[in-house]
Length: 364
Image (cartoon, rainbow, N blue to C red; front, side, top):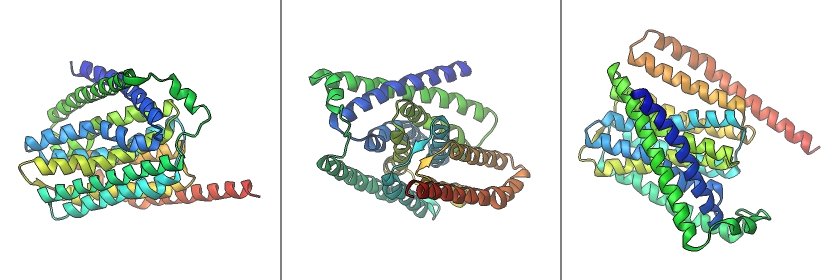
């Protein structure tokens, strides 16, 4: 029965992502809003709904470790797992805006969360601070959309008007595409719930802690909407939306999901020492590492995808070793610290050198 719900959840996820993105594409085209902005706002907000639902339910039941583990684990999975899978499917071009604006905002939000959690607890006031950050981001996005429209830089293809004319008009356009959004999002959330519930049940049978379950199974499960929509976006040729979806989801996880959870939950959220000394710093580190990887060639290649997935596999392996108190945990730390991390720096330097060499050839 557990396997059946897992399969049904996967089918619901894939079908829901296709419907949801169809509605997003139509609204973006109709309103002349770029795929990047749609990915950072509408898509990111909608695909972040499972994280919000899981966090609110966990907070209400007193499972504090599951709340923070879900947020941290989802953000790590969004970058390493989703971008890794997406890059393997098709190389992704990285925009200058993503490097200058979106990634630094995600880094700032991650650093803010680390600063607030460093004393070992997250309070209602911390939730207000995080939620105020969401308001500031929303205001910035609003004015950015207005500027894009004013500069007439959005969707400048010659056949834009022809594409818009193909869409349904009047009230039928809104009924049809809002229907796509609602049905698609419902399928995404339900599919995620079936998969997560099945996986958590298995994990608890084997005796894993709530923090480990939140960091791994629940975080992967609640990141499945981002996986589904990112893959669907790439298949439709909207690679920009895939990256923007990841960055926007990470931002909403911290500022909206965690902020709102802290504001309405009756109790303080205790932050474990493991989260402070390892999981939160790791989440910040991979966010910061996005900048040199992104500017290495202003694209994500298949080799970059393998690097992301390798680090995600290493992270899950470390959590597994830590959960069972394996003696191999220290060996893994040594190999990663003195082997793979320096090798990754060498790899990024090589990517930058290769990119600059290609520019010299072009401009000779």
